[in-house]
Image (cartoon, rainbow, N blue to C red; front, side, top):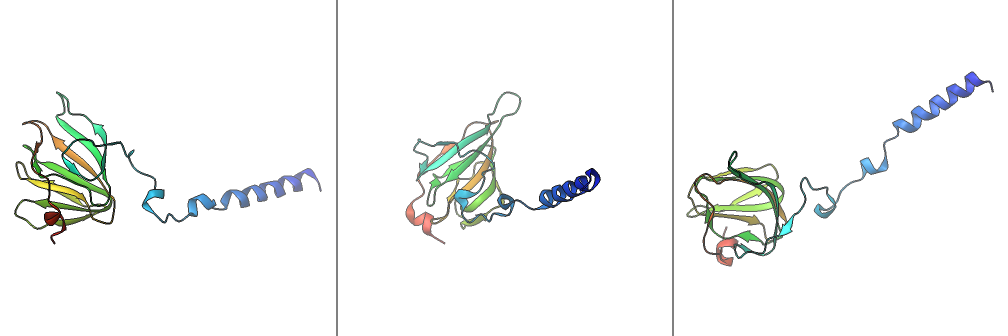
Length: 162
């Protein structure tokens, strides 16, 4: 085989192998724990404003220029915030899993990946995971008129009510 033919064979083999999809790219992901997270899970929240385990990864801290804080919160199944309100409201972006959101006096809403909630100012509400599924959210909270006001825990009866 001359050099020209050898070069053609090498080129063809290179093209064939470079076009073959990798097994890693085609691997099916079967569980949430195997999925790649958008943001790190963060540190477990140790205050008394949550029922169950939740983790927080702060993404943006409020400062004198931009008084909004942004955090990614991961709730284990059944975990939730206490009732609370925000002087300037809050925005919740659902990233993964199944979650709940409820304002005082309103029905509980079910949240799925891609849902967005605009929590009104000074309206008591809570949010968290469903009883059987982890829930990951991004919370955007303005600090212009003061901090979050934390209230009583969400009872199991309130949590399970449809």
